[in-house]
Length: 382
Image (cartoon, rainbow, N blue to C red; front, side):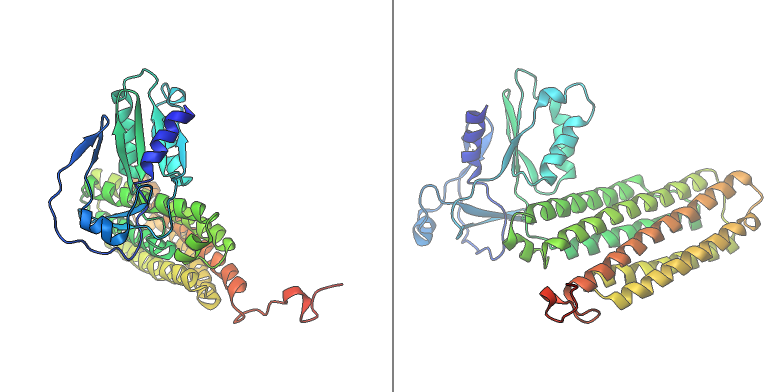
């Protein structure tokens, strides 16, 4: 087994991570050739090889963007992608376990994932492998034969930055909440395909960000490129990612409740819609303030966000006490109450993010605290 894996690791040296500053190439036609049972390859232009001083064993940087590939010689020397072997025999009787094992390997930073078939039909696993491929950014099947399946990760480990991913996740959550209200207001179900696309986009961004954070634990250069100022930031960003994941789940519940009300032909009254609209507008402003406070490590903004979110939850409790005036139907009242409770859950998540923002503000700036480094200020007890 190790010898087989080493062979594929050697092949993987030519499939490297994407990076910045990729230089363009002049257009030239190259024929695709087949290597082994399932791997396709092309030769490199002789003039380019000579110009960059490329020799056997050198590493190349490959970047995919808008359906195009750009290639350059790596200036950092040859790198061996980290690799793992998934024991497929442990997944055979467990539905979707192989998909989850691939996701786990991806998140833990492996660039080559080897799945030996051991006499089994590889097509029996391909549905789960394809599901994992759909869920994970930069993952693709590079080898598919009767003996094994090889997965490679070619996602640029430094792009996007973690802050960019956090903003994207927050925007997706906002879109989901807006859909929930639109369904509530119109009484018409939304396309499930639209929702699935949003959920898939969230999961791919979330899992890529977790992968980046875990890999940056062992790579100071990556830590810096991701915009992280210290290893403590890995913990903080991981906590915020988890909070956003929880917030998305509550937002999905909002959509589910709205869809159930719409399918039951229940029309939410104007008074209830007005109060819910105002509540969600309040939530939008407070949540944006919370996330901005974290991104800027701004304790004052974070404090304002916490106060706003606390006030929002108290107002939601008052709405719950008066919800009986919205309808005489007990079933629909219960569903509307669940809707409001999901709004409260979302506010708890964003309050948690604001609290982390305050912690971060005390880590990096003397704007709010003066840190007595090694007792220089005479504040450290004897």
